[in-house]
Image 1 (cartoon, rainbow, N blue to C red):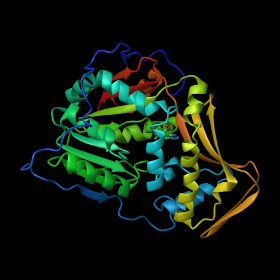
Image 2 (cartoon, rainbow, N blue to C red; image 1 turned 45 degrees about the horizontal axis):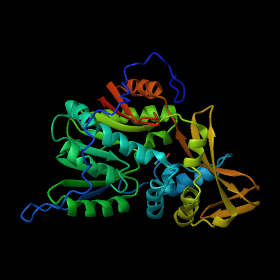
Image 3 (cartoon, helix red, strand yellow; image 1 turned 180 degrees about the vertical axis):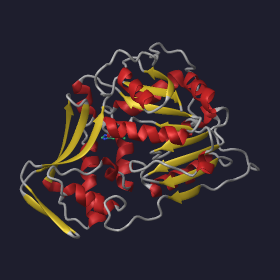
Image 4 (cartoon, rainbow, N blue to C red; image 1 turned 90 degrees about the vertical axis):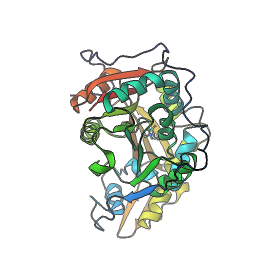
Length: 365
Ligand code: AVJ
């Protein structure tokens, strides 16, 4: 059994390179200038997959899935429902909070070890790989890889198709010749893309520790699909690690209340998606570390007893009753190395920051 929080000891091949080597001066491409006139100008291609689900089927209709979650004895709505356009913007604000260490820690690992990470990835994919960015959002992390990896195509996959389309339109202005493709896809259901889009040896890029939203069996299943998608290529994945509970809880319950707004925004999204009548003022943000499961949990807690109604359903909530909105698992290096191997990846290598708070893994598919 693979567990996130506990060290297994027998999986020792991930190398944690604690001391900065790499190329500290390497920029992440953010300030690259637009290319000179005369360079071919592309337009991002956009795909929505699947085009539409079956209305009322929780397996393919998002509204039905959310409603089914609200009706479970312990109400639970999957974290992907955070990411309407407003939620994507609130998440971007979270990444700039003092308390939210993951984004800037991951960036620091790239700044210190980017050249070594790129070299490891390119050794598996070959030069000029297709980058497949899972949960691309504003595409800033994907774009930062352009200077390191020189991709021939960038495929940005996100559940929020509109948000990613806007990000790619902007990115195309900065990289007029780059082949940019946006895919609106909920890959938490099934991760598959057209073979001619990704080619035989892509780099599958899954940064930010979004893998933490999946419990270990679901994370294994997703990584198995990522391995199939990567073909003969590689995976580059960011993973948040176990650390002191005060640090974790502050990161998910910041003083400005941005994470609270992000959590509550899910109710706004449900109001729109389901025609529900959630009153946001009647709910409170809760974040706690569940040590036994090695995960941060986020919940929305009813301040008063109330009945919530939506198209085709309703539910009564007692005061203090909660809707579970997110798990964010925290792994150890050994635990995640074991997970990668169980999913069929080979030669996993890890780079961490000085505090050992976050890791970037490269593994061969
Ligand atoms: C985008 C899933 C990595 O788990 O830290 C941030 C989402 N939730 N603050 C995380 C999130 C609350 C984030 N991931």
